[in-house]
Image 1 (spheres, one colour):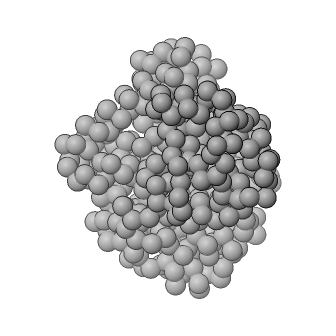
Image 2 (cartoon, rainbow, N blue to C red):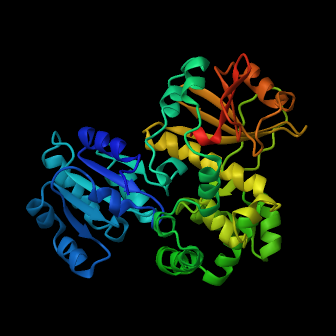
Image 3 (cartoon, rainbow, N blue to C red):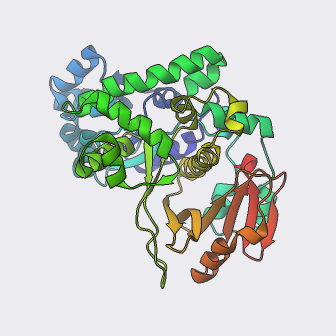
Length: 408
């Protein structure tokens, strides 16, 4: 693999923080990325009994002996190391880029980072491959321009397609997990996704939540695949599965916290509107979604009843991964009124509010963008975006721009 787009941001964090944590879903490529960091690093894998014993027998001594250039993989498995890590950092607080942690999300890891290393650690999330990464293209300039509130003319110039339609559709169908993507063997890809979910449930979820009924939780994930791209009603999910609403809330929190599912809250800052308050959600990897839905191939996906919501989820993830890889924080929301007005994605970040409408078709009909225009005017947004499958970027209105998904 070429360098991941997140590499430059991780290097920036290392220049500013004594410790950097790279978190993300299992098999997203964290270990590979960290192996590409410049400089000499000694790696300790907390899934290795020998490495874990060496680190945890006497954490203070371990970190005095290894005072810098230390990479600790799967750090969530060694929560006892974090207090000693804080002491080691404070011993020479001015020294930057000494420790790198990687890990899948867990209550222990999140708590350790928030309570023990606050102010001492920079955080980055490595997600599966974006379409541009999958086809070995450099990061798009669009994310920096959008974050800076650049003029529409600059965004249109940077919005030329970089992928062919076939490349984009392949990325959409197969998803972004590096191992099956790099294989190219369709049978291996099918088996990998099936076994990945089972391994993820048995290995990570069972270890983090030992009282969880794994069979029922797998049924829950299967149900979520059919709800991806929908507004969620916890009461309906609870009735379908025969469990309580608090159980559904807990299960959703687990899926979101382990990067399998993205929970998108409802936008609640528009005046004089009856807004839908329920959250929306997406299974984060489109390839895993399609395997759970038993979509046979890319041609079958073209006529599948879920294709519009699957496409929406893929574009949402591509946008958020692109901003995240550039080190730009964007908080996602969805917007729907009780009158039926809807916008797929609202991004709230450094350059203000950016509403995004997502279309699977080749060109968006300007007449179908009433909700987007009203939102842009109501919130005085610099720009509204339409992401579609058009052949070139277009200006649809004074403050609305259409960009091909192949430009992201």
